[in-house]
Amino acid sequence: MRWRDHAVTVAAEALGETQAAVNGSLTRLRVEHDDKLFVLVGRKMESTPLACESTPHLLDSLAMVRRTHAVHAYFDPATAKRLFKAPTWDIGEAVFWFFCALS
Image (cartoon, rainbow, N blue to C red; front, side, top):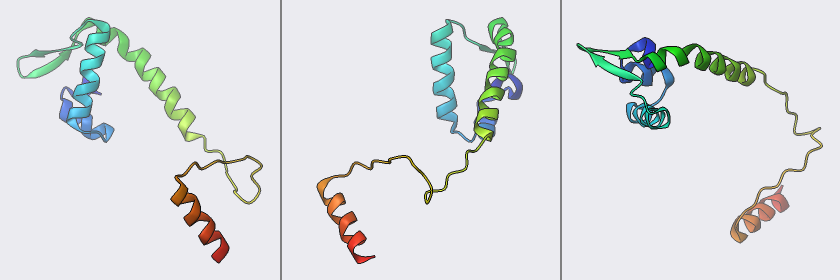
């Protein structure tokens, strides 16, 4: 987002994340790619050549992930054939069985 927004705060708001979280992600990307990715030019952040070159590929990947999340499988617990396990501490199991006995 920063490549378009030119500000971490704006990008963080658009992503629904904190500025610290976006800065942390950006720091990890910088280390991973050994590139600043964004540099201050005057009072504005500008993309490095690597960031400009990577942007279309990253946007394509992000769009693919968003399309995948947009497909919601219907789940009906009454007809589900899958076995679900819910590990609990001993007290959690005792409380669960107690409430099952009450119903």
